Image 1 (cartoon, rainbow, N blue to C red):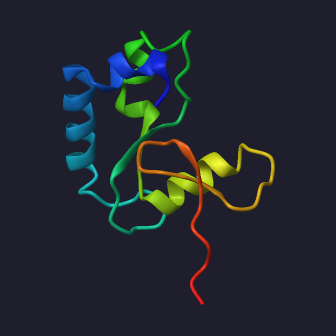
Image 2: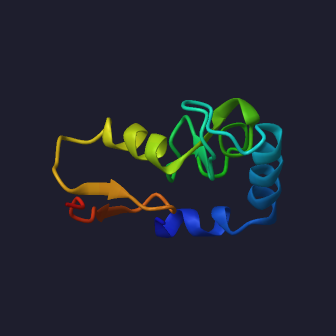
Image 3: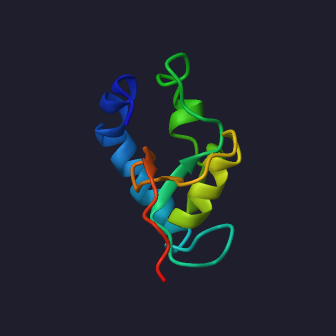
Length: 100
């Protein structure tokens, strides 16, 4: 998690919005229909919009995703790079080697 976003993501307002949105989507990924756990911001948060509730807390800017769909969303915005993925908190990490 980026330093500038920590206060927001630990806020009661985000916790309540995240939980309400999760419940409203029945815990199902909006893209693939599998169980989901990441409430994703369609308009990515940045230091200039982190205090704008129309972006940070509006259901219109949220999407419930599973980890795979969330990884696909963010990796589509990155240059092709083998072995990278996002963890449950949205941090870029090295993916484990494939199972044989």
